[in-house]
Amino acid sequence: MTEPSTTSGEQTHSGFVAIVGKPNVGKSTLLNAFLGTKVAPTSPRPQTTRRGVRGIHTSGERQIVFVDTPGLHKPKDALGKYMNHEVHSALADVDAVVWVVDLRHPPTDEDQLVARQVRELPKPLFLVGNKTDAAKYPDEAMKLYRALLEGRDAELSDTMLSAQNNPNAVATLREQLLEILPESPFFFPVGPASDQSREQWAAEIIREEAMKKLRDELPYAVATRVNRWTEREDGLQRIEGEIVVEKNAHKGMVIGSGGKQLKEIGQAARKQLEVFLDRKVYLGLEVIVIPGWREDVEALRELGYE
Image 1 (cartoon, rainbow, N blue to C red):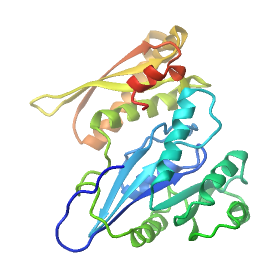
Image 2: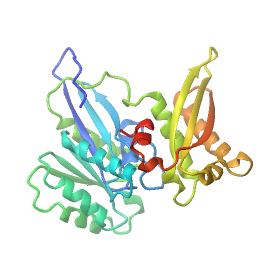
Image 3: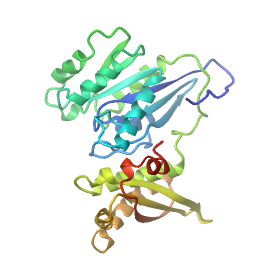
Image 4: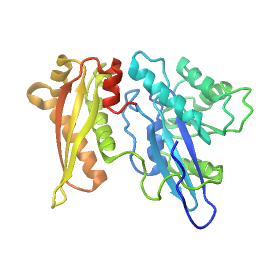
């Protein structure tokens, strides 16, 4: 864990809050809503988040370091094992946990897997029923999720909201989390919303757009990385990145007929980057093949999954 930074002035409170849940329940959407800016990729597809993304919110003398985690699931490859390890690592040393559940559905086996991880943790737990705006029976579903935590001794709170559409409810939950933080120096300087490098952030924006455009199982065989980022004198941001696939056949699918698919991915990612950077962006993308990268520990490390 990051060592606290030194601060001066009044007594500060700071701590880590893990956001956990099964895949595709809205954890990253909630993190972005907590911060008021986008630091984590989102898409309708499960397992969009692959690594623990830290989002930093500072209010006065209080600072929350949110840790957005991959969806806890039964892993099928080395990448899946890495993702689950990210969850377990996040839970090992935090000050509070936010468990996000999808109120459109009753608990699944994956929800029970999460419940087993958080039920006995001696830390404050916030059960967040998400997607209330799309749920037919949110109250009934919430009761079923609460039942998975029966017998818990440590502090438990719950709330229902839509991370995408209820900014007031999100702000209220954030204030509750700020209030329970222990006395501690700030862990990060005031200002940045994330501890990611700009290259990591841009690579995740590119992967998000690729996952939205690609169909079937292909999105899970795709990784991204940014190899070069330069700024011209006129302010243009020149970003050069790679989309990594496992097979030559996948390469053709990502590029598409006449390069159409790759062009659409690049255009969508560039628009996002320009909005958040408030600068003109040139985005150059290349598709490369690393055979079986999801099962190759060294390849995973090179792609930033370590």
